[in-house]
Length: 464
Image 1: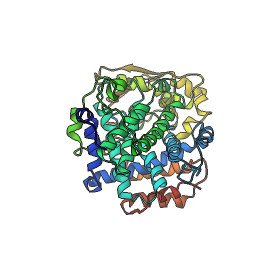
Image 2: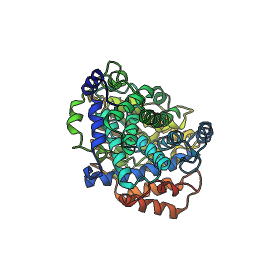
Image 3: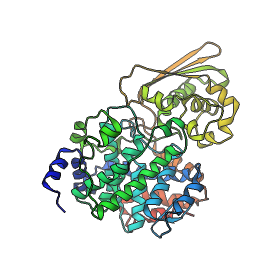
Image 4: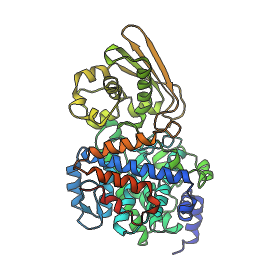
């Protein structure tokens, strides 16, 4: 149905109209080869971290509660195989992808922009059936684009959990493309997800499982919003820039103009950073710096007197938290002192460093208490770099390095071999044993995703 004259006027004045048009008009042929490759890379990465997340905290309780939403033959939970309504499956799978802090991130946006789009896309692929690989890749690229652009446009520090709030819009963009929404329906879907959007930073401060659950909630909300818009529900059209729209309500200061100019020219998925370590991305700069110094100078944990991290204000806000005697696993993943102590002891950081035994190990905790954090003078409220690491040895030597670009960033990327090794390690940690040959099949299918006729067959490899 056409919008009323007054409504149409408001729609054209709000930036959401440009995003809706961007989603509607672009197709697979508009994706540059580099973007197609990026989609494949991070689809496989998302599957891997989701599989590893099957061992995450609260999974049994979450699946049990998700079953209360009803059983159906539509969409499956990765690894476990339960059939649930698409909204419930998307919720659980998005949680699995984020609960180990191993999912990729757009650093400039401060958004885990793949997580919600991939979760809803795969739930939709099973619900509908016969969504081909080219259509899937296009929808995911557009979802990542929308979520990332919202984060890039923000000029404010985090007040709400942006990976979940912006991610909800990315999920709606993905679903709208898969369902072939027109621009008006797309705007109503965006408006409907705004009404449901949630994501408190208190979950980040406390370091509990609710942080990852907020990704799940907003994946579910994206499915609900698309379902309602498809059936004719109308939503307020001033979605982004209204008095109580996304930016003023959730963000504060913003500048959409550069993003409007970049639509269709810059594909944000090409800017996504891999996570080589299962911890908050804001810990990766100091980790990269510390491991660089450790390789260059060959010192051991026992030789270190203390470590000083000079980091931007956002990085300090996200991961500057001190060591606690009793830490929840998610708190430890977001504690730079803890992850640096673990890396000093083990020469790296793996999922095993967040076992109950590891996060209560006194040697590790004592070393973490000798890691200090200072805020540098970077005025950018959304900057994660540069970071400086200074290590003072007990014998008096002092080593220092500044990291402007962090391992995993497109300017310092994981190799293909490292990317596949990360996937295989995640595969091996699944809560239920998944055959190795199925991992090989999934890698091969994603590598040739444009030739896949039914994307739901990807999930056949991810369940026992």
